[in-house]
Length: 421
Image 1 (cartoon, helix red, strand yellow):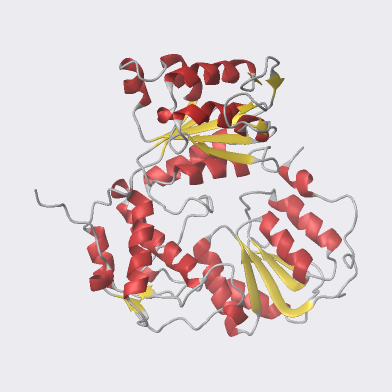
Image 2 (image 1 turned 45 degrees about the vertical axis):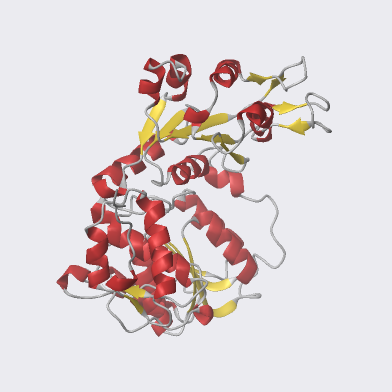
């Protein structure tokens, strides 16, 4: 069954399928995984007095449309989660009174459903004719996912000079560097399959983000995504947490409990920091991966479950295996398809996009801030040992230090310095 078929409903929702009924005038849902394009188009539509909601994928757009029933839907030629042709067909069938325009022109023909269709077409053309910021233009980007009425005006200050994001990236993967584009390509290749994936990378690079993307793009997307950090649970409790236990299996086990593996049945189990798993437990994990059966602590019977395992580590597991601190057979079983998340220092060309992305997110709950060129230059000269996570924390701190100022300056960018010994 295709991704589009999985969300297609057999019955018509109340109030749908009747032209114009309940439609919100001058409301438009804009669906695109291209961050740069959707922000430029949003600005053009806002200037034409449209109320705009943006979505990065088809499923998110469906929820918005079911809730608001907008006058129009503007759809990109590619969606990260659904097949765009089937999605457009579903929308046309169930919302015949809604104007549907595709940025690639595929659905622009046919009778006009909105009296303001020409405004939409004009905004689309203007966005596609946008000159790249390298020529001296600056671009102000409002917060993603916030309606026009909720947004405060953007501060009139210097903004980042960005290049347009590549349309083949995933919404979760912010960046256009060669390393990120290769990572995105590999995610797309392996996500629909059942192969075990080992995500490798330094602390703070975003390994859990990669795991969530793998789950979202798989056939298991509607099933649970269960996370277990092997380093965050005491060794004495990790087995029971992973496999579950029966009542009275050990001191303090006052009731039976379902383990994380069983809780992920039908879906994905993400084992973060797998290198911290004790050797004794590694043997049980290997057996589960080989036969798909688990045995709860304190129980003799086995339970068969259907779970895809994705593991992550910042350690060199192959080297650990040579040192006899990690099972080599488990390493090979986990690393059926290894993925390497590049460190931030190895993709510094992505820094402006990452900065803008985090400022967008922070602008949803607090006044939107821009960043000065001096502050960005200061960030470029730093090695970022904490990677993307450290960048997010630095920007959060800088936003607080900037107080009521609209622009984050270099003085607000507080970076770690080596301690003197």
